[in-house]
Amino acid sequence: MPGRARTPLTLLSNTAGGRAPSAPQIAQAEGEIPPFPLADTGDRLAARDFWAQLWRSSVARLIDPVADAYALQRWMQDIDEFERLSYYCSASPVVKAGSGPPRLNPLYARVAQLSRALAEWEERFGITPRGRQYLRVQPGDDPAQAVWAMLHEPFGEDADGGLA
Image (cartoon, rainbow, N blue to C red; front, side):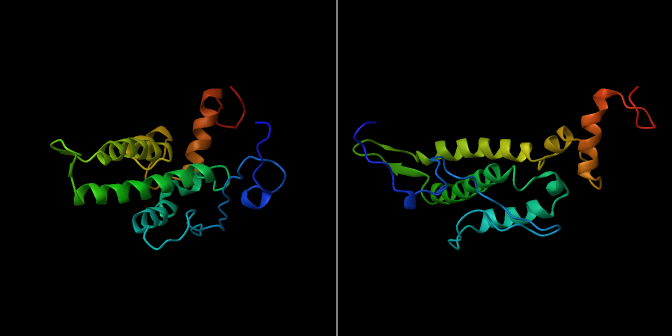
């Protein structure tokens, strides 16, 4: 928009010249739990616990911490928001509307929306049985090997590794 001052570079997260925000980076050493992607406020216990469980699960080797960094950050934000709003809804399930009768807390709509989003995240990352079935990961299997087999199955490789 002409005449509007641009945001100073010091206020942007991507200071390398572009105006798009930079994607979060999650560094991970082999067999190590990556650092939690959200700011440490001390009260994100449910999201932190789930983060640790995620990286200890059998599907953790399928997650690319670099390529999936933004999705993982959004997932943890959704878990955190779901837990906070669920607490508020359980504390006051009914609210008094201006001059009308008491009604159901409007935060329940957002809790329901987050619940659906979390179910999609869990399926996408293979946390649910259906998600593991979609990724063809069974308990005790090497998930990377299962995905490799799923990718090469349509090409009809025979036993010696050549194409049929």
